[in-house]
Image (tube, rainbow, N blue to C red; front, side):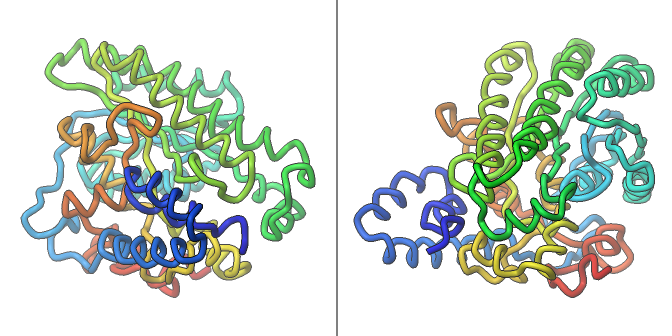
Length: 373
């Protein structure tokens, strides 16, 4: 059995409370528990993450109201593509002003334009998040445009080691162990994907606190995009360590910022059909099938936009930053599992005919409809 597809991986697609039970079962009967966990997680994900086309303006389920974030300022790091792009668009649907940061000017400008077309105001800010000086300058520029206030920060910037070295990409696909990979793998993941979250939070904190002081009835929101890889083996040792550290960062930031009126949440998307995942589906489908625990990717995967819609709801309604939507304090505290929260809040994925959401992400999760080029 592949080490990427043991029962622990499948169990991590279940609610966090189910993890100890699934792991105890795995010790007793490895194969039977894996089969049962896979069946259960498949049913839950199909219910929570396989979402039909919409029947309202911004594709919210019947009876649900799209949040209104007009007048609020948000920063999404690493937003020229992938989950960051989806988060920015979700906040744009809620009419927020969204500053999108990243290294690719063309991608940033495209994301900013989509945010504006969706109903918000998109502002591209060129920034290499591996360079602390550039991050400082970026937040200085954002502060000038917002009067020194910030309502929402979503730390999403991440550098995949596979993206910069085809050889590393091949090694990871074949399940290379940490000592078979170059040391640069650790640096890539921890510099952009962990340290960059700390640095962005560092420069954003005074602005978040200023927003709180300006409006004491509203608690700003600080998020970081993490993964169930933080509690189980996924892809590589460096990846899991980075995600576990991201979750710990959020818990400790909550200890320090929570009493001052800022809430911190770690986001756990499921299997997200980003551009990189789409590439893997074409080039290395076996690897993704292992990570998915045998689930049908066409049915179980979610678009990056679903995370954005969950973030918009968390930003608009402070009650959603508490259990059951966000896990209680503890070793797995301050986690928001995107698919489960979307299900509980009746949020949907994709878009209706003519919407920006449909143009970018299509009405359903059919791999042939997404990022074909």
